[in-house]
Image 1 (cartoon, rainbow, N blue to C red):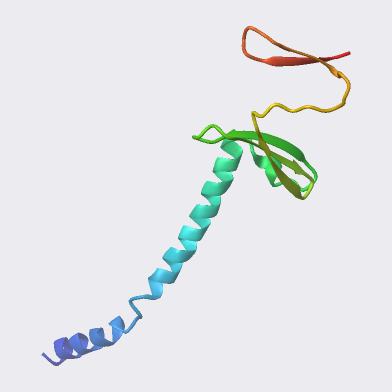
Image 2 (image 1 turned 180 degrees about the vertical axis):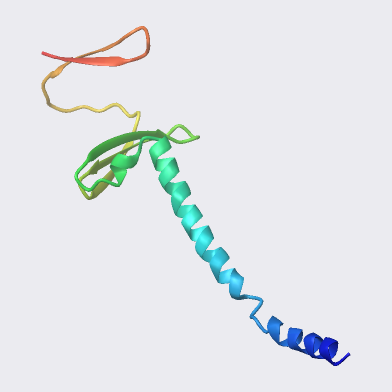
Length: 111
């Protein structure tokens, strides 16, 4: 009988571990998961050039209300230009001609 009582009391001391100790490990695992998802999305959308400091990237974006923005990245500098449908005037010279192919591609032919 003495053996069973001693065994029962020794088990009480085994459960003194902090119940919130595993939460820190879950937080670390979620941060690793988020970074992995970001890298997977960048590679799926072929946007790894945005992370390269020596690359040049141009992206045209159209919002739901019809506004068009052109994002240009040259090295570490990123600029945003908004395109308007207002007619423009000024002095300049003709640089070439653009043709739209039947498949929707646009080809620029310099003069």
